[in-house]
Image (cartoon, rainbow, N blue to C red; front, side):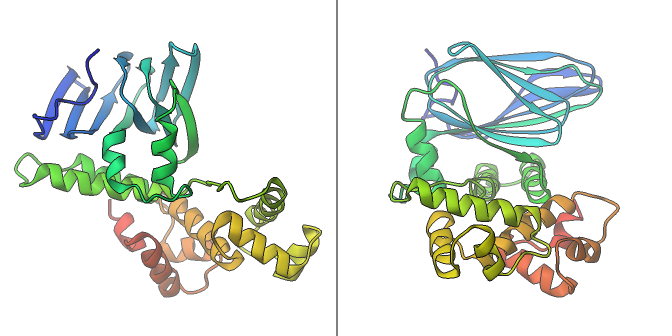
Length: 305
């Protein structure tokens, strides 16, 4: 059975148009051995792609408009990614059909990353996202959804840079790989991964605190109030939360605020100052610095796309 990824001896950046029409196209781009993406920009057209391989891979989908359906022939299940969503899947034995549903404006991006590419970045720590995903696809899994989130501004920004590498650019494979790594660092960093030394009771306590913070991270409760709501003491809550989520409560609130800002920056009718205020920051400059220190790009850059 042929591999989905091109042969190890042929590592050229390669674009293959799979379908073309007056109002759109479906193309495959081989960035380098182990990284491939599909870009679908179709109008009122239904297209299918059949994958029959034994590759171990992570699949990242981003549906700006339209809908992507994934029919897993092995486990006889249908998984879908709807408009405005991005999702991460694991697969180690493909027998599936990817279908771009008929839509007025279909805009879908699908990234395939081989296990041997991920292997370059293994840390040896089970709580690292790449290690977690790599070891998951070493098992027999036909198609499993790992995470699904709304599309955010930083994801759009990274993918736009990847899609707009011009034919005249030098070192296209390296440039494209760089943008892919930026993209997966961001998305993989949003995964919640629990290590084996975390007990079920600790996960329960930390998850309860997380749920409360998610309800109101703009004006979060004090640590004392949060501990009371979780029926524990401050010291234990801080210790357990950091063990489970590898973050202090303060840093986690900041993370939630910046993730929300990342979503709001997609809104064309909002200024950076309005976004900052909506997520709990009074000063735009302070917000921009925090955003840059977390994501490596300033909010104004995302709004230029």
